[in-house]
Amino acid sequence: MAVDAAQLTSLQPVPATAADRRLPGDLAVWVFILAELLVFGVFFLSYAFTRAHHVAEFNSEQLTLNRAAGAWNTVLLLTASYCVYRAVAAARAGARSRIDLWLLAALACGAGFVVVKLGEYAAKLAAGISLSTSTFYMFYLSLTFFHFMHVLLGIVVLGVLWLRARAGAYGPANLNGLESGASYWHMVDLVWIVLFPLVYLLR
Amino acid sequence: MNHALAGRRRGTWTWLALLGATGFAWWLGGESVRARSAVPLLLALAVAKGVLVVREFMELRAAPARWQLLLVGWLVLVAALIGVAYYSGVR
Image (cartoon, rainbow over all chains, first blue to last red; front, side):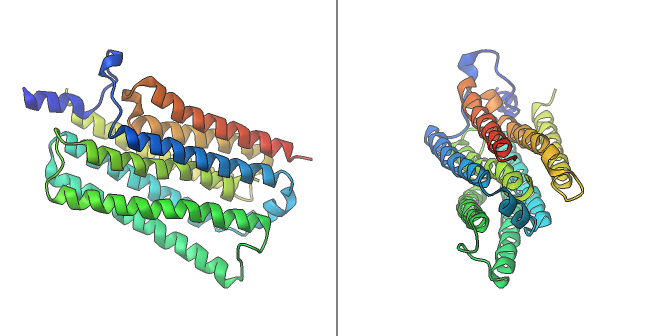
């Protein structure tokens, strides 16, 4: 019967009653996620409303960004999120050997994001661009770097999850740590989903 | 019915939809599209992608409703205010 219960929870179907609904992972992580979203939200809106006073400057300098790099980084973060989702699904289904493989794939995508982003920073640095170049570049550099730091922390979290998964820590009865780390990673992805069009595309 | 398999398929379709939306947004943000008319579409795409991540990857569709409301509310509010800021910048 225990196996049946594990299979039934593996899809997390929308529960019949409100009492069956549960938040994945630790409540503390979700409070942290809300706080992070609030900070990013304020940052995004300061960009948008500052831009309203410097429309021409923002529009012309935005065209100097590497949109393809931004799009590839979106693909990498979304794919990492998908891999993390699959790792949680594998743990829930009791497929222990696949948990660490999916986490490793997520780590590879996260590392890919870092490489692409560092390449963008290097190109801007080589072009003599810094925080004091313009209002647009002040926002571009500080916003994307603030997010970049979250990606780095997310990679550390995924690395810890990977090590623990290899040690057999996760299964249908022990999901809390994995779900908590997964939720943090999805938040990093969610923030980029707004950041990418805002800074790279909207003119 | 195998719930685990259905869950994986659902996740895979979510991922493919997110990639498709990203490709479309990238095209919309290109220089060939009139930028101003792309603004509402790009914001709507960002909200749609965010809702997919919140409901499917974060699995909040199976969580107490207030959590989904908080995160989707954040997305809609931020996107709407960005829209307001963009149109207030139009001269």
